[in-house]
Length: 482
Image (cartoon, rainbow, N blue to C red; front, side, top):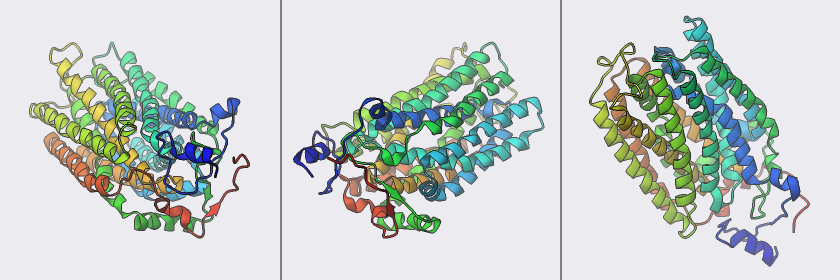
């Protein structure tokens, strides 16, 4: 490797790797350079998630999926996250055989079906079982989508860019929730009812169908060259058997990932209380739409703040940044939940049934309540960004990162399945809230030993365990090597 290449790989604070032999390649120029730029591709992945998971988030954030009765929605979410949890454990292996584009293309269909089921329920009120079945199907599809997304988002940037690229993705993805919430708020602004009209569901459905075709625009990930000239690891696994074995190879060679499992489990657990037991329980439909809007808007700022200004802050070593990010999230966990506890003391399922008159945007107590939604949005985005960043700090291998993402989504969905079912059987709001707080605190405490012992200033070759396997086939190297 030339001196120039070595400087490009290790200089300018890029922290690309501590591997002694790093091959550097010329990046394409012109429009091809723009198309194959890692930031462009991560933004395209964000756009796919803007259209599909973003609309799902907007719908879920309304509380009860925009319906009066939350039972069908809660059961659908329980079914969704149960199948999501099961298939996510293996989705990393499926991803490494099918490839990210095909996983995204197949997976996005589930979001359109899910939103169509709510439209059907609005037209035919007895179609609640359809929503539950659609939720179960979406769980399988979502496992494919999120595993492909996580692998690409963590593999494309250099080590010095990972927090920033996660922030890019999270901003675009959450714009989907912002736009969807704006549609719901605008179309129901003159309504003081507790459910949305058909037009809202139709608008969401059109947007998700648009998202189905967007994966066709993505570049082949094995033609991608990072901004420092290093190539995205070109690997192909020849068999399903090899891929399933890779799950256990990843666990055996990097057992520290187990310490993130409690953080993964809690990472969507808090949605049930936020959306159904706070937003859905206390506010009418137009106010829920506005709450949803500010929640997803706050996510954009929270993710970019912690990703770009904390986790990628170049004046500090990566280990220092890891501790800073962890500390900020812990402070938010306790501050926001103390605030929530004060509100939760004031209402129960009995005192505020679904048919009761709900709080409106014009009520005097509303401003204080909406600020809690804003801070929950900040906490959620910083939590997810930190979790992805910690996984990205453990490896640069897209195959290994796909396995890690599968673990992430598996445990995340298991937690969601449990809490949505608890909500469906009408467990007290306070019980669900306390369990949410305890799990969030436990997740961060369990992650601390990993931050201390596993996060290094540079990623070592030993961290790329899946690449060293003898039955892994490498793709041909590109010809534009320096």
